[in-house]
Length: 168
Image (cartoon, rainbow, N blue to C red; front, side, top):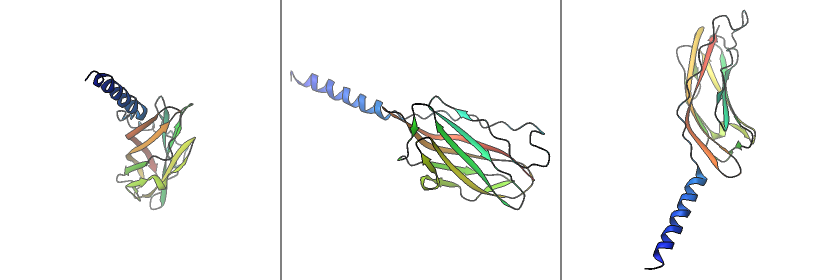
């Protein structure tokens, strides 16, 4: 039994190293974007103001919306950019879930990896929506994705996102 202790120590060290290499990060949900101040959009424009980007040490998440008109289709966009030294993990099963409100309704509640445009520098997905009414509205959701550097990958699960919109 003299040699059992070094074997156990070696096994524990290998397991610790393997767990550290995976480095799964599940950050707390970030606050949703605040409502835009009244009158911030150009006169007569129904384009939604750009939501502030959610910043993390390894990535930035930005939710934006195009011009929205009642009774017409529109689109919301979610873009993720890795910070310097990181890249998009294109192999990870990216997913966005989204819900609307009385103003906008997403065409799909879930957008899996095959709906995303992914490259080393960004991940982006367009969410088709139907604009049901004029006025202020909001869509909310959560995104699961991954960014990597040369030594490890961060897996981000259920990162909260929101789009504040104004439809005419």
